[in-house]
Image (cartoon, rainbow, N blue to C red):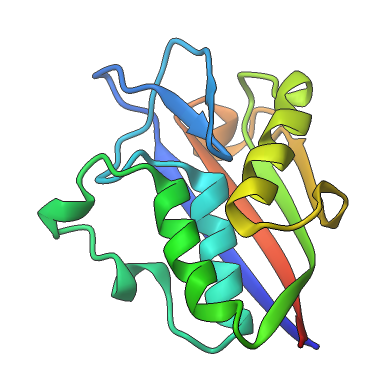
Amino acid sequence: MRVGHGFDIHKFGKIYKPLILGGVHIPYCKGVVSHSDGDVIIHSIIDSLLGASSLGDIGILFPNNDIKYKNINSCILLQVVWNCIKKKYKIGNIDVTLFLEYPKISSYTNKICLCISNCLKCKTDVINIKSKTMEGLGEIGKKKGIASEAVSVLLEI
């Protein structure tokens, strides 16, 4: 069994960019400042999977100064990473905590789990998505950004 941890954070920007979380478009008046689509959930999962498999981090594999990743759908990046890992491991569990004040995502968590499970070719019951507010504290609490942490457990095949 291998365990990895991932984290990602983005600030909300003045220029509207769709808010994508876990591969799902979430209607909101703000988008994130990012090179790719800025999907903090997928980015934290990628880093947790890379950590569990000792394959580095998202910034090494997909540099944010490489034009080919500009506005890329992060689900594509997740699939690339999973294709490198799936020969040795299967998903034991992925647990994600999203930190944000708004928008509320409880009505989207099932759809997010389904999207992630489709990318990873695993069952939805091994993926858990939850969100927490920052109770008005810090930059996220002031609605200036969004962050995600993920823990992944990989099981050897």
